[in-house]
Amino acid sequence: MNVAAQAGGDDNGRRTPPAGSRCRNGRIINPETERQAGSVFATAQQQVTDLFVGDFAESGEFSIREYMQNPDGRVLVLDYPIRQSGTIAPVFRYLIDQAIMHGMDDPDRSAYYLLDEIEHLDTTIKRLGELINVGRGVNCQAILSLQSVAQLEDTYGKERAHALLSGMVTVIGLRTADEESVDFLRETVGTSFEQYTQNSGDDHTLSESEEKEEYQFAKGDLRNFDPGETVICRQGSGWVHGQIQLLEDRASFFALCNDRSCTERFESFIEQSAIFTQRLVGTL
Image 1 (cartoon, rainbow, N blue to C red):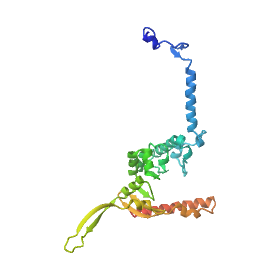
Image 2 (cartoon, one colour; image 1 turned 180 degrees about the vertical axis):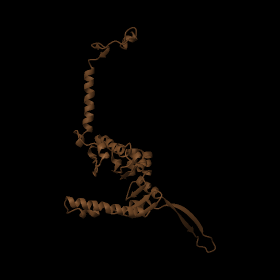
Image 3 (tube, rainbow, N blue to C red; image 1 turned 60 degrees about the vertical axis):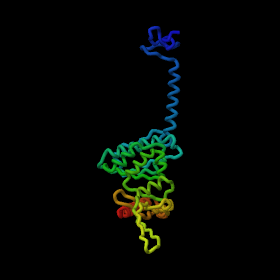
């Protein structure tokens, strides 16, 4: 059997059209191509349909770039739907990355990024490291809220997760349970050297002194913090153990008020909380 013919060529090795096909402008047209293209299109359409659901199902007029250029006093909230996380996570990653990119384009404009429980986002934010490590130089502040360091390591990988955490200037640690979070807080707070003296009880025997390095908090201490009990650490300044006011403590603060007074009271609450945090951190 001729090898060239077996591979779809002639005796001189040139390619020949498959049976039932014809040539147009020197190109081979396969009658199966149309059906293959339809199958590819259907698959792509299904992927897009699964991705653009909920608020992204229809074309919108909102622009991340235009918002970052002129927020006009507005706060941009991206509400991540946990139930659809498997399909919609790439959209949120793109939106957050775009917000970071456009926010860092203008160093004369301040931007704050409050990223709540990013370890539960089923994808990684590509520009997060840039925001944490470079953002301060262009007036972009990152505030990360985590439930578990272990889950952050699972999403970003152990090395990258620790690199992200090490870039945070201030750490506020509340009660935590998983081993990785406890170890991270203990390492962040640091250690101290304690002097221990051992005496045999005999007046004629000299006592022995030993210096040991110990963590400031035992693992059980961090796991048993009361609600609102916290340890605040700031790079280069030390740490402080204190109590912060929980939002639940102010529930009645907003209970019986109309929209306008709620807005005013909420702004007052935020201002008071900011002053309290500044004072607490300022003691470091």
